[in-house]
Image 1 (cartoon, one colour):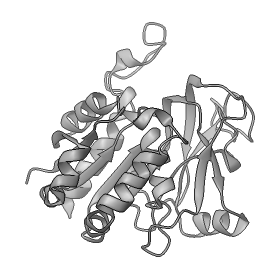
Image 2: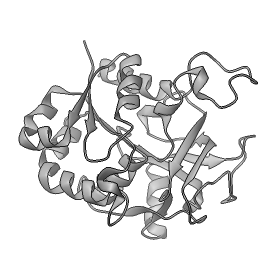
Image 3: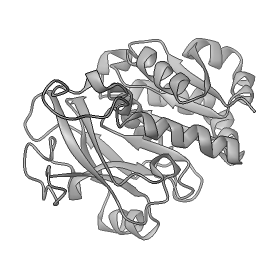
Image 4: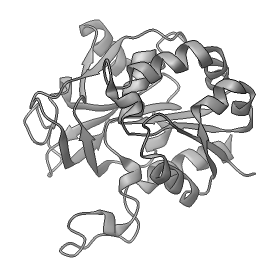
Length: 261
């Protein structure tokens, strides 16, 4: 079986080539497809097992990061995307893609409806943060993309990455459901406790990524596609770093899950 992945492109998305490369190296048959082509022919989604919304600056981050693309997807492709998820397929949104997902309500997807329960807003530093961060995988998370992974070191590149739930009840539900997938931490693995730069944006409870209740729909601010080769790491000449970048396993997990199901 060939696992097929659709990587969204167009209108300011600019990490599509890296995301396509990561999925291809993980064993997927990946295609970059323009948003307009999917809107014109939503049936394209039926050909794929994985739908990826890459990072970038869709629609120039006008209004708010990801908001315009979120509205385009929700109102032009809402029903096909609901079917895509209901069919047991996988979705990932990275950085701007994560912003899109929370603003269209595809995450956290508590009850299967596209309702916005969380947001991603301006960093506490009030500036664009481009730095490498340490991440701990939350024990008990349902996220299939993180199977067998305990920690990751990945870059962040965002100005609006601060995760905020609507209220304490939403935060509690995320933990109860096993939907908190990734949290920022210190290099030694201890909690960041909101401290900059370990937590680069001030995210509530250091949350860097969440999934839906099934674990198949995953959004995160850090960029796994930007750490798939040893030479992606800024200290590759000074540290003993494996030839394969740690981020590639995220995509391998997705492909392996699709093959197994």
